[in-house]
Amino acid sequence: MPDTINGLPAHPLFVHLVVVLLPLSAIGIIALIAIPQFRGKVQKLFVAAGLAVSVVGAYVTKQSGESLAKVNGVPANHQEWGTRTFYLALALGAISALWFWLDTKPKSVIRTITGILVVLVSLAAITSTVLAGDSGAKAVWEGRASASITLRASSTDTTAGATAITLTAVAQHSTADDCWSAVNGNVYDLTAWISQHPGGSGPIESMCGVDATKAFSNQHGGQSKPENELAKFKVGTLG
Image 1 (cartoon, one colour):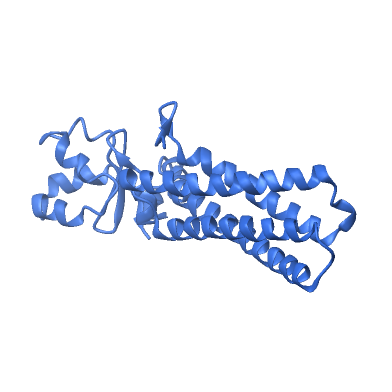
Image 2 (spheres, rainbow, N blue to C red; image 1 turned 135 degrees about the horizontal axis):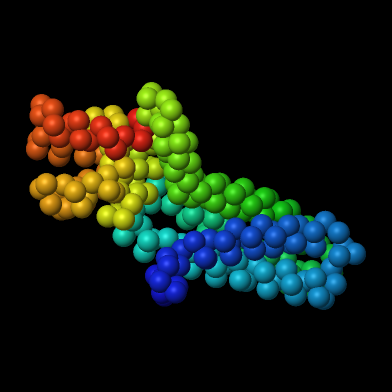
């Protein structure tokens, strides 16, 4: 399974497939069960195909997410919801297949019970998909938006660095081209400082995306010049 597509991580692409198709397919199967007049062959075919693609997409999304996590890390909350979404998609696909088969038979209590279960699992799958997408979006964007506001405000307000940024958000800036670090409860954008650091780029790159308080204190604790230089790159406080 490719980890990248056209040079970009594959996970976001697969995520969008599942976030759109799984809820639509879940709504479709609910409509089939609740509205007998809706049960045409074409409608059944589209819903069945959507569920099948959703299951495959959820699996591929889970696998690509695990691969991405090994490189960049991933919030535990997002990973947990992603895993739940995959298993709910799998359960929905299986129980829906059973309902499709029972729908070709005479009406029975078993078909009714199966239909109720399909509706309940569909609602759970929709909820899990929304929460997985929400947690992923927060992991990517939560800190960046607040940091952007801080940087704009800092030109006129010297106290603008008080914006709270989570360590999860800091972790999204973990490369030499986009390097944030937390030190002593504050968050700094060290991207520009990497090439300027007198001790070379290595020590700064090791600070990217993490709380580097211990490393900074061991190297420069109590030294006013490094602390003054660091202060120039402050974008907020760790919250």
